Length: 390
Image (cartoon, one colour):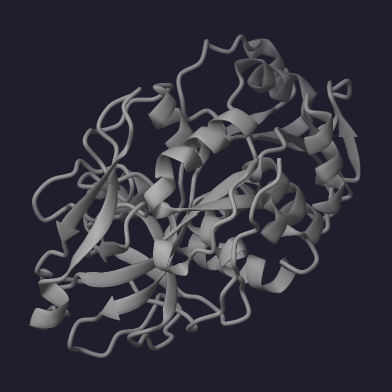
């Protein structure tokens, strides 16, 4: 597939903390509050996404306004549009987002690394905002907060029109973890950080040390390739990548895979990461884990048939199975740091294979669903130089 490589920019530096309503009050600049912008609204499976003109809302205490510079289409966005998973409608999709700070609270603001944030800084932020004080938040599960707000997954409603990345602006809510991005980190690399990369960081954290371990990665999409890179950088003894697609397997070598295969024959891996969401792959993960092995399930985020596993095998081989969905704020920090340190070693920028302007968002989805690239980017029209995939 021929396509325009996304234009990589390096505006700003790093970004913002867990936004707190109790600490900050929103700036009430009329010029900011009354502007209008474009937002792509998903209304139903099979219907064209509608490009609507909406007003930026009057910000509530603790909210920020960010100008979107890039949004990549995640697999869950494609599942929503194709009907493979349910999502509130109407809504503004897109949660792999980066942007530049347009409006800040009056008080001095720092990101979760303690770095000062100023208007114009380039930032990424957590896919979800959490309250910080419910039982789940207190249990280190903020991604399952009892009052969770998820970017790109909220119903389009008054005051919440700009909650996804497929728009010119996004309003950041209280309880959002924000990271100011390094200047040297390209947009194409940084954009998936707050979904795919941070999720893999959570999976690797859950697996424990990978140094000197035999690692199996099932699935060579964005999650799987990122897992290969993180395992390789962590000093894994071997990194085996399994995927039925030969082209994707070959690409895995560039991301640290020491061997690739279409079917897994070995059953002595120390750690198995299932990143595809395929029930057969989940079954293969249980079979491939060696004695005392850890199995981390990540890819199963849309409906599929139940997986058949042998509980006796799990017991007798002392296997540990862990499910990972989304991540904690510290995983987002890990993700950004990893990309900043290693994006020249592993070609993450090449995974965003083409980009489209926001005004052609339907073509972007069609391209992604038809050609199945690792990632497609949607960029505001004013930043886009048009060159469509064939």
